[in-house]
Length: 175
Image (cartoon, rainbow, N blue to C red; front, side, top):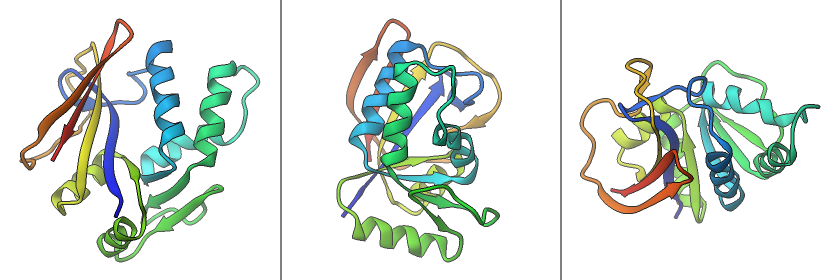
């Protein structure tokens, strides 16, 4: 059975905004290692569309960007969307009977499945399917945006804390 793990960049006040939280070199290396060790990802529509940036090499990329893109392209991806019809390579659409399909995916796969997208994480948490949260906190308060947590969450316990360079910390919580 798979373990569903939410891995997200989060502001100190609990918001997710991928445009305002651009990772520095240390945080980017953290994400490269994370993507390399996680062969499966479950995406919400918006974050999947944002991540498709990594499908095609860009002329201004350095070695780190190419390394991240290569690892991201190798991942198997499942995308939860009722509006998308066309996905990139290694991606499977989940558009109907979403909860049942995600439960079947959890039962069928082994190892970790990274879960990305605030609304998707919320739904999986509501359904009791989230096993772990790896939250990379950035030293800024956004004051607006999409909060990672809406409503009550099951009790979580701190499992690890890891400094990432001089600017960020990853807190790992298990349910």
